[in-house]
Image (cartoon, rainbow, N blue to C red):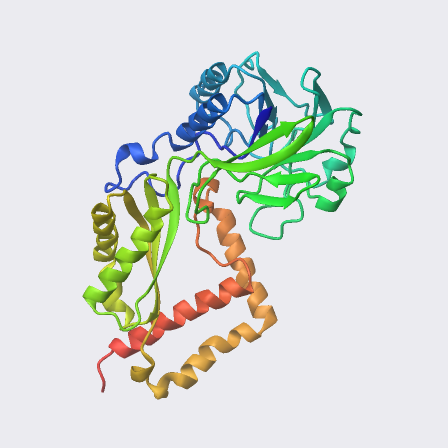
Length: 407
């Protein structure tokens, strides 16, 4: 017997900032999350799974119209087997104002307390607690039902766990405490990077179904779980994304135009080789010692075209989302006269109060940006990110000084 564990589908989520791009094929972005969900259903049918689990954030937020709910209903009819649905922070009960009757094969966990569903013929017991509101600051796993004796027990939970990363904190919990609950499998959601926190019992974040911006690179999909004699024997990642994101980091040190084009082509080919024949969106980042930035910056369109040209040559599909320059001026040409200026420029990062103020300013700026665009922002959120931005700022200043005529 097999089942699928998915989470963070974010149906009809926009790919922020990209829909206005005239150089991208219209069909590349449109319906991206829907195609990934349809591929999930295709996988469920092909693997003949017994049921599907969705551990929160099926929807990205309130529906713009009823087509989102109707699409889900169509896919559930195609699935033709049980689906157990948990609400997360994006599709909490208080957020989704439009409503359609659930398809007959879909069972939704209560928002009031932990509830359980039994599949007696399979010996499976499922436990879950949906989010009533977007903000759930407490550990709701403490109130989950006791495991049913003689059953394989599965807990569905939308949670940030103890993740210290960029995800907002919702229903935080300690994985060690989950393990003590006595369940055989914890089907988690909310963290968009796939993580197998532990085995015996299995505690798994499958990651989101479809990458939506540059911080969600690589294969995206779900977990296929195999059960024998009411015991989990395998948990496999299966990719169902229809558009893949990649970061192309290219060393521009001592590279003339021809050498740089070759290095870009190598990076593109490497990315395409791992894309499993999927179209790609990529960010090109140039680093290393290279000539002053202004010359490179005006060539961003050409650099993006080099990536596209290399993809065509390799027989794949790749478009550039952005070009980022992280190069530094060659040491041999750096003027010692501006060394004291650099020291003064970067000395401020040694002041904890200034660092805290700057990070608070960036956090406030991020909060003013609408949620769909916020996820694609490239703003520092910690001291390391601030130091990296300061280095980039200094490079721009140094390049501007170098470009000024003497006299």
